[in-house]
Length: 179
Image (cartoon, rainbow, N blue to C red; front, side, top):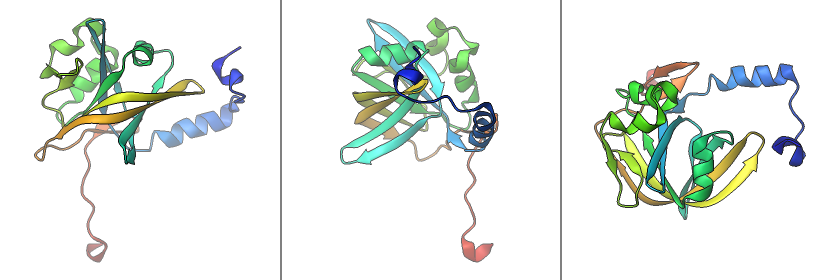
C-alpha cells in the first residue's frame, strides 16, 4: 500500500494534477539549499518549499519528497540548515539540484561548517539553522518543522527566485500612488 493510500488520500485525477502543476510553476519561490550532516557525511539539496511557520517560537517548515536521501537524513538527525541563495548563486542551486555529485557539492562556493555541525553557505542572502521538532508525512512529501536556533542575513544581497522553470530576482513594486 502506498503512503498516500495509507493516509486515506485519493490520488488526484490527471487533469487536476496537470493543472495544479502548471499553476504552481507560476508561484515565485525563494531558492534555498537545505543541508544536514549525519555521521560526518554532509548532504544538501536545492528546495523551494520553505516558509516561516511561527514567530513564537521562531520556526519554519520545509517540504521534502520522501524518496530523497536528504528526507531520510532529516528523519535521523536533530538539526538542519537552510541557506537562501543570492541572485548570483544560480550555479549553486543547479549543483545541488543534481548537476554535481552529492559528495562534491560542498567543494564549490563558500560553505562553512556551522558550530552545530552542518554546512551553511557563508555568502548566502540569509541562513537559518533549525532543530527538527516534527515531521508530518503527507502524500509524496514530508513537512519538517524546524525551530530556529541561529540565523544570519545580508543587507547587501538580493534573493534568488524561481518561477516557471526560470531563475529570477525580485523587483520592488511601485507604490499604488505611482501606478
